[in-house]
Image 1 (cartoon, rainbow, N blue to C red):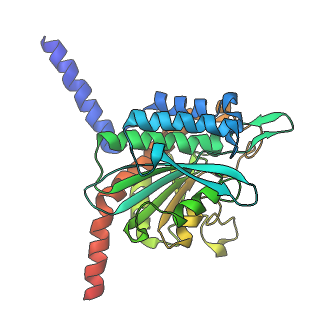
Image 2 (cartoon, rainbow, N blue to C red; image 1 turned 90 degrees about the vertical axis):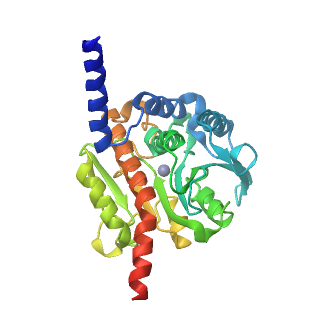
Image 3 (cartoon, protein in one colour; image 1 turned 180 degrees about the vertical axis):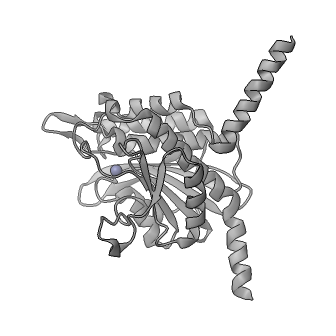
Amino acid sequence: MIRYTLILFFIAFVGCQTNAQQANVNKESLLNDLKILAADAMEGRKVGTPGSEKAQAYLKKRFRQIGLKSYYKDFEQSFIVRGKGVEATNLVAFIAGKSNKVIVICAHYDHLGKRNGKIYNGADDNASGTAALLQFATYFSKHPPQHTIIFAALDAEESGLKGAKHFVKNLPVPVERIILNVNMDMISRNEQKELYACGTYHYPFLKPYIKKIAQQSSINLLMGHDQPSLGYSNWTNSSDHSAFHAKGIPFIYFGVEDHEAYHTAEDEFEGIMPTFYVQATRTILDFIILADKQLDAIAAQKQKASKK
Ligand SMILES: [Zn+2]
């Protein structure tokens, strides 16, 4: 009996230690979601295709399982992609917070579909970000957030950020209430264990948060790819966060450098790096938890300072 209690105590102690460093992500469920989204059965998740519908059905099932709320019927914010004439569908869910301010977490679930008889499964681009989004929704369903958090699985990114553009034009809440956008696009593979947090050049008040998270992260969390003058590629408009930025909504985009499988049929589940991916997901979750806890305090301090 004593031994049993001691073991329990030990487990609880170790559990707390880990939690203090990095928030918990369920590795098995994270990888399972990615694997399912990046399977041949989803046919590359191209906007307006039966493969996309399968991906949507899966995501809606997961949203319901997690117990998320919806602004729309069955989470669907649908629209016609101009020029293509196909229907695209953003899947939008939320968890209500104590404050009426809102954080929007997004990831595009669409990819390139089939080309020359090959299926482009887009495991890293962007089943990885979409599966991470499901983990964050699960976390906040168990740990109620301060802010309302919207979880948006966006469509038609590969057709010119169309899903994100439609979403910001048709926001389910007033734009003034949105204090932050966190976008994830390609977060599951990098040989150097490097993940970029892009956006602090435009929104320097977010820098201390990223710095703090970088210190406790087990991967290399770097800032950059957002300054036009630095000579290497500027990712400010490279993915869905661009539409939020255009509306003046502060953003952080998490992503890795392009790799050899980028936009090829080789971007498969087998190519992702599970350890790095889990660590990247934990790191991003830590950032969201920190921002959820502290952003209002920072905003209040700033307001106070400007009144002096
Ligand atoms: Zn992408």
